[in-house]
Each structure stands twice: as structure tokens, then as C-alpha cells.
Amino acid sequence: MPLPQSLQHAHADLGDVTLHYVTAGQGPAVVLLHGWPQTWYMWRDVIPGLAARYKVIAPDLRGLGDSSRPADGYDKKTLAEDIWRLAHDVLHEQRLFVVGHDWGGPTAFALAAQHREAVRRVAIFDVPVPGDGTPIFFNNRWHHGLHWEADLPEALTADREEVYLGFFYRTWGARPDAISEEAQREYLRAYRQPGAMRAGFNFYRAMRQDVVDNEGFIAQGELQMPVLCFGGAHGRGRGMSAIESWRRVATDVRGGVVENCGHWIPEERPQWVVEQLLAFFGEDQV
Image (cartoon, rainbow, N blue to C red; front, side, top):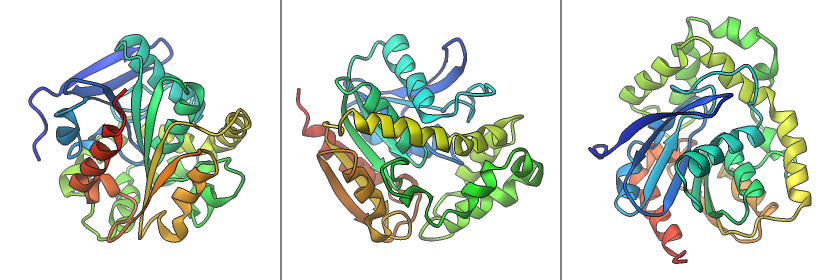
């Protein structure tokens, strides 16, 4: 599906970081939060279907895509406040629907936990919550340990971004072409920019702080807004690990497993994702 002609690119200077973001459509605000190693572009086939009814806001997270790359601030609590400042202070949105994939999921959790009255509903694809009281977020993730190391992953992947990132694009979906060649080229353009790989690794290096922050959020009480969570059958859907994690931190969680799908659900089955989101958000008529 082609992107809407009304899609607008802009930059918001938030002081410590400048966020690149795109917007499309009119209506209640829906914020789409991407993961690693992707950018806002992962939502390209989801945006048109949502923009028919909603104002879609799809930022590049701090350090990634065409946003700026500060030296720090990669804990998800800070990332979530970036998104709040963009949506609330810059775009003047008072209430939000929030969608997250991969690292966008923990960012969505931190956003919802810090702004419980403003976040109407949360939708999550293929990611659990670090700090949910279990080690599930870290299970079977060999690359986490590598990414934690100071400077080593940067040295190993310099000028080899296509080799390293290409491995994830080819193997983490239900099929090798789950992410199109066009999308891979766009992601590689973004991650070859100076400092982009380091910023991505910093998302992982902040995980210990994320656990501490999330334990604090959970101690304040479970999320009360409805949560929709799906894991890919070849991804975090195995053992229901994603949805079971969210059930530990929120009271109203529905969803399940997406068959014939891996980690890249919004790119593997974009029209199905649109249908699920429209139905879920449509329940909230307030």
C-alpha cells in the first residue's frame, strides 16, 4: 500500500535531542514506536490504514533513524519522555493510543506507566517487559550480551552493517524475505550514519536501568488501560512469552500468537495489524 500523500516529515528540537517524525491523517492520536534495527519506516504499510481514521505520529527514537544521537538517555524512561514531549508539548495531543514493537514496546510501557491518564490503550508486538519479575526478556537472546560490551560491537560491525543487521532481517522472520530489500536498504542507510550503531547498542546497555525503572513503575500498580499483545509463532509468541509478560504488569491484556509470523509482525502481516489495531482502538469511543 502506498504511503499517504499527506505524510509529513518534521523535526522537533526538544533541547537535549532532536526527533525526526512523520505524521499522517486526522483524528485521535496514535503513536507508533519502532524497534531495533529499524526506524519509523517499519510502519510504512500500517500507516495508510490507520491514517484513514486517526492522526498517526511515527517518530524515529532517540539516536536512531534521522533523529539526533546524544551520548546518553537510552533508558526507556527517558525515551518515553522524549515521545511525551513530542506528542504533548510539540503536537499538543492530550490523549494517546500507543503501539510498540521490539524496543518500542518497553518504551510504550514506560510511557503508559508515567502518563496513565493520557495513554488510552497500548498495543504491543513481539516483546515482553524487562523487570516484570522474570528473566523472560533476556531468554534466548545471544546478542544482548554482545551489545552490552563497551565498544566491541561497534568495532565488529563497522563497515559490516549489512552483514550483521542482515542476519537479523533474514532470520528473525517466518521467512527470509520477511523484510523487503527496499526496507533493508532504508534501514542500512540509517544505521550506517555516524553514531547510529552505537546508539542502537546503547538501547541494550541501558537494560539494567530499565529493569530498575520498571520495577518502580510496577510497584505503583499495574497498568489499568487495555493492552493488546501479539507474539509471532516464530518469535516471542512461543510459550506465550510476550503476552504472559504483559499480563504480569497490566490488568486487561488480550491478544495471542500470530501464526506464520516471526519477530517482524508489522512488516510480515501489515494489513492484519491494521485490522487488529482499528478494532482495538475502536472500542474506545470516549
